[in-house]
Length: 123
Image 1 (cartoon, rainbow, N blue to C red):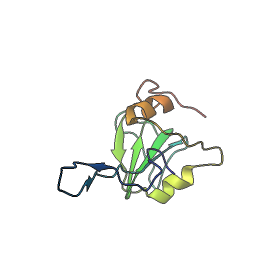
Image 2 (cartoon, rainbow, N blue to C red; image 1 turned 60 degrees about the vertical axis):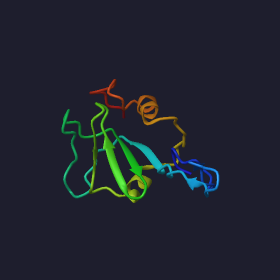
Image 3 (tube, helix red, strand yellow; image 1 turned 90 degrees about the vertical axis):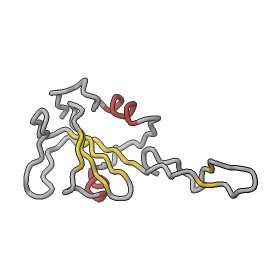
């Protein structure tokens, strides 16, 4: 089970009216966020933040079906077309602890990617 995943296969029904079949709610996308302290160069070119020029200490965010975003400690975030779900899964190590967050904002703040630690690098 990944972050923000409800963990069940039961549909969440909404919009029920008498005499009609219940309509399933839109599924919540499955999301996995993994801190990645090292530099990234998926296509041979070093990735750097367009806002603060950082070159390491990223948050990799995978959103199903196949979108990967990179977030910097300065809170700048962008879709990185050169990264795939397998790259995010590879970034997870044995010490990776899965957690569930109530919102993206809470996750960013809890992991230190809300802009407060801009310019700070952890080793």
